[in-house]
Length: 308
Image (cartoon, rainbow, N blue to C red; front, top):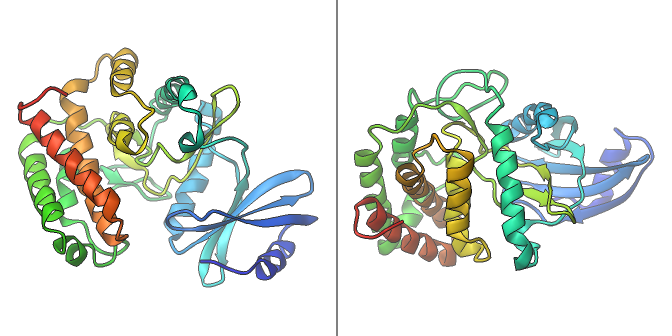
C-alpha cells in the first residue's frame, strides 16, 4: 500500500489540476493515506487492497445531506496494484486526541449523528456486512449475523484461528463468548438499519465539539443501530474519559423504545469476540488481554452475576 511521495505526486498530477503540498499521513488499519491540495481544495488520497471498502465510502458520501457528515468522494479506481480513493479533507481532531474535559460534550454530539443515521433508509436485503451497489448482506436474520462470528472466514484476518489458539485465555474467552451469543440472541430484534460498526475512532471533531466528518465505512452493516452504542461502550477501556453511565443515559434518552439494558451487553459481547479475532491476527497482545477481561465482565452481566 505504501508508495514513495515521488510516485504519489506523479499519480495525482495525471488526474488533478494544480497538485501541491503532497504529504504522507498516519496510515489506517487497511490503507495508506496522503494529503494534497488541488486548486483551492484540500483532499485525501488513500490506497488499499479492498475495493469494496472504498466503494462503500463512495456510497456513504451520498448521505451527507441527511445530517451524517460523510466526506465527499471525488473519484476511485485501481493503481499501484491496489485500489485508490480521493475524498474531501475535513479538519478536526480525533476523540483520542481531545482534552478529557471535552469528551462528554463530544459524546452528546456523536449521539446526534446516531439519531441522524437512523433516518437513513438502507436498501437491499439481509443482515451483516452490506456490499455495493445494492446494499445486500449475507445473513437471513440479525441473530444469524451475531452468531456467525464463530465461523468468520480468514479472507481478511489471515490465520486468525491459529494465532488465537496460541493464547489459551483468549481462546477460552472466545469459546465462552460464542456459546453465550448462540444461547442468548434468540429474540434479538430484526431491525434493519444502518450500522457504522467502527465508529469511535473514525470521526473528526471541530473546536465547538461538533462532529465534522464520519469516515471509514468498510465495516458498515445492516442491523440494529443500537450496535453503534455498544461500540462506544466496548471501547471505554481504550478511552477512559468516556463515562459509561453517561453513554447509557444518552441511549435511554434518545432511543427510549430500544431494550437498551438487555441488548447492549449482548452487542458488546459480539464486538469483544470479533475483537479477539482481529487482535490475534494483528498480534496486539495488550488489546487481546483487555478484550479477555471485558468479555469476562460482560458474561457476568449477561448471566446475572453483576449489574451492567
